[in-house]
Amino acid sequence: MNLIQLEQEYLAHTYARFPLCLVQGSGAVLKDETGREYIDLGSGIAVNTFGAADPEWQQAVIEQLGKLQHASNLYYTEPNIRLAQMLCEKTGMKKVFFSNSGAEANECAIKAARKYAAQTLGSDYTTIITLEHSFHGRTITTLAATGQAVFHQQFQPLTPGFVHARPNDAEHLEKLLNQNKCAAILLEVVQGEGGVNALDVDYVQQAAKLANQYGALLIVDEVQSGNGRTGKLYGYMHYNIQPDLVTTAKGLGGGLPIGATLFGERVQNVYTPGDHGSTFGGNPVSCAGALNILQRLDDDLMQQVQQKSEYIRNALHNAPGVRSVSGLGLMLGVDTLRDASQVVQECMEQGVLVLKAKDKIRLLPPLNIPNNLLEQAIETLKQVCAKQE
Ligand SMILES: *Cc1c(COP(=O)(O)O)cnc(C)c1O
Image (cartoon, rainbow, N blue to C red; front, side):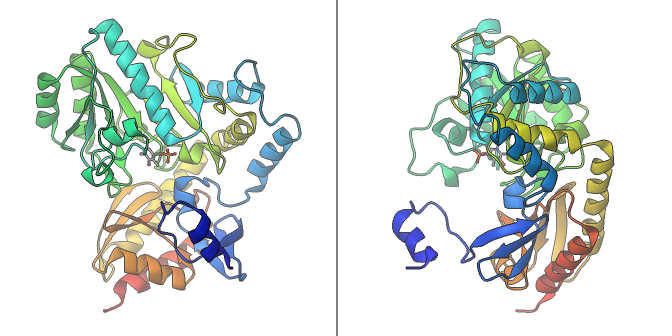
């Protein structure tokens, strides 16, 4: 039996996969089992920050693997401590909790917000406001946080205490703050799975102000938009706000599983021993890799990300078959006249891997994709978008 048949037989049917088996890669180029090469504009969904098999990241990971792969959180290890320090120094946040995924990073923030609200507002201040079209994960609680009914069906009852506000509508947000006893507002500054839409600056600043006014925390989900993806270290940095809690995952590890919840001044001491934990959280190998990634996300690279973003926007602006381009940095959504699934399919046939978000094409290339490969891939995308059906 070939791999596709074996997968059908032995794996839970949670993914609609493309008939493509990737075996290796180098930077922004991936190779399938037949040796065919693809330019990667997806980075394994914003995970492979510096592309496939990045030599520097690999060296950091291998070095740590040779020393100690895991220790448990009963003991101190160096990589997670250094990584937490660097995260705080680069963001002004005060404390970090490490987990293994975006959903877990959000679970940690939600628990922290509930505990903080119980201490400061009262134990009935449990509601968390999230936005319509948001995506926060697949656990029963982060599904409840996710403002898209399509993910909720057949999984009820979800964790109670979540209400959904209309994005970019501060009045609606204030109404929900009045109607509910709220612990926090949780939002993605650039909604990824929801269609790559950056929230309005005014709205995000209003949300921060309202949260403060009502004694609720502001939690920013940077699982996808974080770690240099938008052309700043974290997406919220485009908005001139200081969140109380920041969650991240995907690109932080450069390809190994890691989640992080960052705690601001007000909430830095909300957790005490026994409140939260994770067996794999802060894994030394993941953290050694993440440390390498984080230290390379400097101003120079952020400028390159913004330049590449400009290049893509200019190339696709008014291009035949392209309605509009949304998003920030190298987290872009392309609204195409043609059916997005068809565009993804044909790009793949032409040797370019792109993603979808709702009805749009989503582009999340490695942050260091060479310009010539980016130009070649965007040219292919343009041609596919321009095709008449
Ligand atoms: C992917 C994603 C998550 C979930 O992350 P997992 O690692 O799959 O649990 C949560 N929030 C946002 C914004 C995401 O893009």
